[in-house]
Amino acid sequence: MEELKRKDIIRYKEDEIFVPELLSQIRDEGVRNRISNEVCTYMAGAKKYKRRHYFFEILMVVLPLMVSVIEIVLKDSEWKSLFIVVLSIVSAIFGRIIVYQKAFESWKRYRKYLEMSKREIFSYIYSFGKYKNIEIQKEADDLFLERMEQIFAEENHAWNELREKEIESKGK
Image (spheres, rainbow, N blue to C red):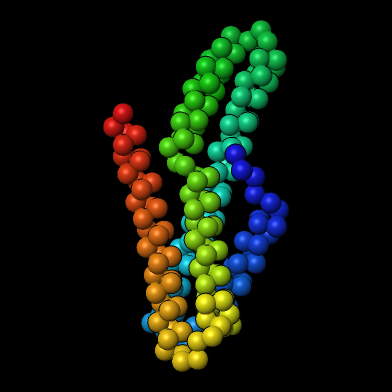
């Protein structure tokens, strides 16, 4: 599994301050609201799935360790077998939930589209990249809207593909 770097974790906390400030600089209120809605959804989704991912990963380490601890601590107890069976079942259930939830994949997907959106907003506001040589503001606004809608459409398509795969896997 791909490991995220510490700077990526720290950057998320900065996003909670940086992104709203960046969004506030979009001139048109309707456009700002539309983009804010999507970008804030990406931020919230990244945060939610990051937490889920770590929660389930920690559980999948702790539960099997607890089986070993119970084996040692309750060496001669009649309850030992029951605890081990229950922990094994719970561990198997959470293992299946990890596969079903796809928390890591969802976290990465939301981060990807958040970063793409931030880069596009930043380029638009500070007139660089594709916006560098555009003299007429209306042309820059139109290009910005077009590119942001492409990002939103791409994310929506990725989300739909993920859901279709989940439906297919449930049928098997």
